Length: 525
Image (tube, rainbow, N blue to C red; front, side, top):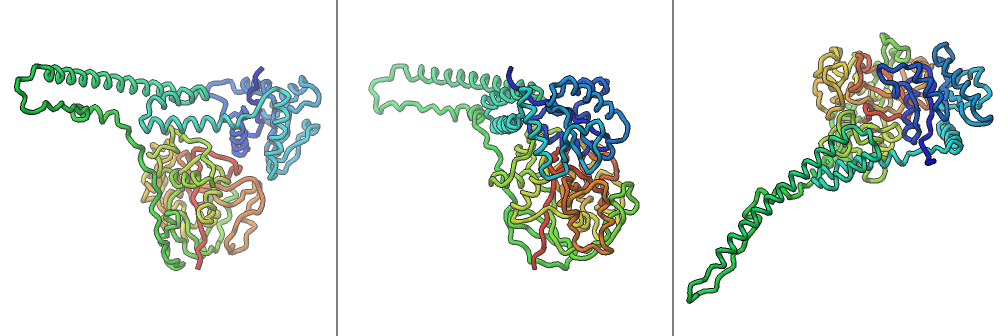
């Protein structure tokens, strides 16, 4: 029997769906066939029946423990079902793995099994070691290489088609279908390329017949008897296919792909901490905006969640922050240098080949986790991810306001690319919403993509309450596995996500089609 992917069922509380989504993403990246209800359940399915089926078919059940998990609910039924299934396994097998998402008690029924703390730095690797051990027993494997192979195949097929290499592109798409039969639109794409090939063959046959007719006609004229005497030698007629069929030959000419160039490098402006804002072009040609030193109000006393409270004063030194979200073409320069890892997927929600297609060069890079974002910023001459405080000041300025542009409602589609605004179904090019920029001239701080920042988020703790009356350049908690995301995205369907005070958080290994980032740097005197 050939090896298959390891099947893992993720049992969790509804309140923990965000960190579990991050765990699901990482397991999937590592080739695990993970079952996560938000990703696997389809509308109309009998969810209780499907969950029971998934538990029974699983090789491993990972019970994601938290303070919320210990409350009553269907998840307790899932645990009992997992325990019943475990009774059918050989004694000593790894089947149930308690995984703590935070400091909390274990369930009494699970105490015979050693748990893993996913909030520790080596927690995921410890879990992965257990999964590898289980995979050996059940003749299953983890297949991270296949995911990379699929992404490489997608990139190759898209580029060949863009360069009009239709025969090679057809082969590449057929190979891609073998790797991922459910890839959206693959059959339609193969059909389109086959149609293009048929048209090219027809043009070639018409062109060949036309050329042959002309050659025969000329030959017959030249073969007639020449009157005697001949005063000068007959000059053979030179037939040029290009002259006869200029439009036909141009059809067969390969069209070069568009040149991908970065913004020309400019000399940095003189550092000046006093103006409200000014442009600065870094050594990689990326425009940044100055945020002057001083105090501002951070947080929101009227927020519906505790961890945005209380509003408090923060002092920040001057800093520069990217005027736009980091784009595909800028990120690709780091990948091409060998310093950065390519995005986890080359597609966006609605665009095939989003990362490799020059059409989307000036769109924000997506499918990057926190470490990838941090690596890129460091590569850019030791820039860094902005702190939460830097991001919020760049978004709101010194005034107390809800959104980067002021207090006007996000219902106005002129301000931001948010799902609550009609037509937001994917990312758009950066800098499109001029009316939505902040007082410092920074674009897309609400909407388009949610942005990684440098700070750690601790669940169950309100970090703001630990700060002094005026916090001086705060850096956030010093240890934890959750990282903060700021700003709404094209998926955001509620107004709260577009506010300057909203704080999202995910495990640092999370990557999504609505998460990107921008960089910041200190002002050096």
